[in-house]
Amino acid sequence: MMSKVATLCYLVAAAYATNFVSSFTIPTLKSKTTATSRSNQGQNYNLALDLLHPLRHSLYQPNVSSRSNTFLQSQTTQADFTNTDKATTPDIIGTVALLVPSSDQPSKFGSKSPVQPPSYREAAEQLARKIKQFSDGRIAAQVVTPSDVDTSSVLNSNALIALGLTTPQDVQFLSRTFRERRTAGEEEASSTQSLKMCQFAVDCGDNNYAPIVGPYDEANPSVVSEIAPWSDVASGKRLATQMKDLFDKQTSDEFALALMLFFNRFIDKIPWVQHSIDVTWEKGLGNVEEIYNMVTKCGPCITKCLADENCKACIEALDEIDTRDQVASYRTVVSYESELLRDFSLCILQKNNIFGCTAEVPKIPYVKPLGAFRGKEMTKDIAKGIMIGHLEGCGDAALEGCKELDVSWKVACGANVAYDQFPSQNQLFYPSAKGDSMWYDPVFRVETIDGRNVWCKRHYRVRNEKVPGTFRFSVLDNGVTSDEFWTIVDVAEDLSWIVFHYAGAAGAVGQRYIGGLLCTPDGTLPPESEMEKIWDVLRSAEIEPWELFVVDNNDTSPGALEAGPPPLDFYRKTASVIG
Image (cartoon, rainbow, N blue to C red):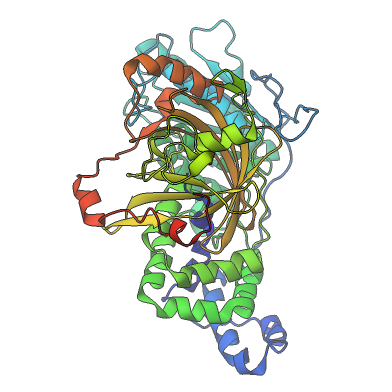
């Protein structure tokens, strides 16, 4: 799969937009600047002032971090952890109720999958699992219908999300429930408890039922949200717009992301979205320190980037999005890749970690690796051969059935909304000349935001983990190190298909991600007779078939022809390999 680390790397440069005015003076910065070299002193000081101008009205408003007093029993089992012998049950910090129709009906989820859309109940059950995954098991979610005997959770949960309610009876229940929650929130308006409520109606007809996010209530808008952008109510209003956009995309990843943003802002820190490199009102004066450090520590990189048309275009494009939205940010970054951007992120993020980001590889869900292949217990050598798949020139490391192709595998479909929608996804796994490690080169086509078709490529080091069939991937991608844990979930004995699961993190940008891949030798879906087994394999990794995105691997499509031949051997031709 492709590296995820670049998605947050460049939005820091949004602070350097060309319309910034150098009229904001902070004396303390001037004294600090004297510690820099005299040759850069004047340039860096003036640049810092330019960058700080938009913050001239910013006030410090720390995020609410108190925990919710409302609890909903978790519907999920105790988490298993890949690298620990003893599993622990995390503290529940908040709850979500997913309200679905009384009578099942098809949803709008899974529009790009190889299967029919799920019902709203089926979708909600998977969304509850995704919420658990993204929150490390700290947010409990429950699926409820208006006809259930016990519907107390719709009133008691921190977040209530209604999905697809359109019948008169269901709409009546929805309206009454939203009204009761709103009344309860108004009664607690003077307490911090009012910050802990959220409610949305998604795909419930033309009425949006006036969402609530923390202290912001669309039905009762406050003038404070307009005149005090640093306030909690203004923060809630901005978040309401962002959450609605994410919900409307009807994907499980973006649905869960929207809820993580709410809990992180108004209840407790959620590592999945805790870190941001944007200049935001929520950070308050913390923006000042970050920008000052960027300028004083990486001034030359910033100057070079702003002087380059491509680098500057990337900055302007990223200025329009939230870096925690991996879909938008990753597509933008790969549209403008360059050495200048790489050097910029290497200095800002990897070397100096200006934003103090951290991230660990997710441990939920735990995915059991394949234990045997062709009647033999799985070994590291067999697992290596499975990864090599059908790649030519790997000698004895390849297994019987290798087709000697120019790729190991092609991605037929993937389960991560940000990274598995790219067309023409090629995978090359091949042994290193020294030790037991391998190389992994993903080569994929990108339809850039300005309409071009280009090839992108990465070069990963792959090392065996303790359990055969599991691997640790690492890469320095666009100046930032990414760490990933891969699992061979299952593979056909004739190597006609394989299912991978991956979980990764890029600590320097505070980014985490999970996903899965169904791969074949030519990138087409396996025969229908195999699909039910494959769907069960994916479900064992907590991935539903409707979450998959079918990859366009048509070599004769207009986009593929425009991009030209893929640079499959770009790294391999210079690497020392066996065979």
